[in-house]
Image (tube, rainbow, N blue to C red; front, side, top):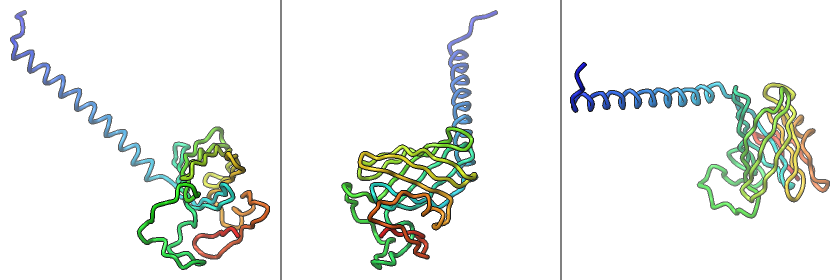
Length: 185
């Protein structure tokens, strides 16, 4: 057997490097395809929460791998506030981070019919909510913040959601009949 020349070694190194790069690209493509597949099969449902005596509402996205995300905001998702007439689709103004305006969180199953949501709000409030699932796309849960209670529902009509939300004694939740569904007064 004859020893390899420097050009043969360099060629072998290049082929090995290209093969490793191709394998890496293929694995990365699989991960992106998996994320795209999960997003395509995701279910989006309405969500309502009461955090620090404020009603926030939005959407929970549930993925087939038993995880999900929740995005909530003060005033819900309607285009125009029915009480103030403010255009909610207008250019956003800077948020006051000392006042609760929005919350986001991650959902994960902990058992067949139970899960948790770790909720983080713009004002620094955090809450770990223990969730009970009453269907594949419906559930409710309760937790604590540093200053009080928190509650969250998803996949429910406003009337049913209202029954599961913890409302401060001096306030009440009413159905609005608009796209936001609920209002706290």
